[in-house]
Length: 249
Image (cartoon, rainbow, N blue to C red; front, side):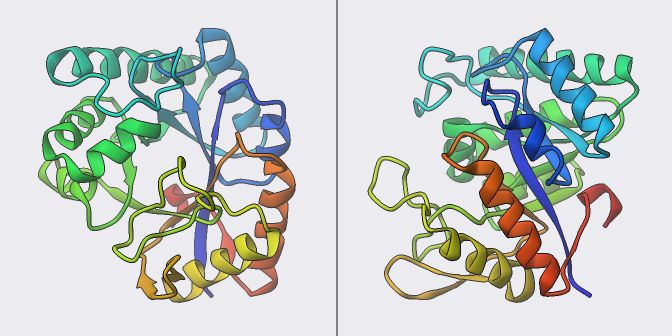
């Protein structure tokens, strides 16, 4: 039987977080960079624990005004210090509530920049390696994120996206372009099954692209996110795919 983790980015002020936490197996909690604060972190972690969902950190560029979506916002020591502060705060809150930090997944523009930038990827991996409990590093396979995880001896969890369109080179279509997010539920569920069973997607130019996936992401900030997540989980399970956190794989 195939198995896959299903994750969502939470703690960003969206109304459907509690509903999503009844569906996904892992969550990525905004930890004060692009969104979130101590109160929202604690609320999200408590709900995750109640639902048996693995807790991960979702640090981003410290750009709350732009929601962490400005490419190249920060680098070097300043970025390292900001990410360390973000991840450490969430790890401390999780520990106080009885959970360990299972993984770190960068947010937004930081994620997209680090896919191609080894220096940025190395900063995120270094921060992850310094967190107690040996959290995994979540990112896109065969990119600088995975290479950095290897350099720092981190468990790497390859991520793919059920509700995002892909380019022929395996990268995501930029959100600024039409069709970057799959609004059609059938398209998202079909893509989820292909990723989980076959490790492939159809790029927007029609080519078949190989995409390794240990975890599938559904964005919590898109319209109908909870409905889409439930449909994806139901379809995967109807195909015999077991939904389980990457910590249990």
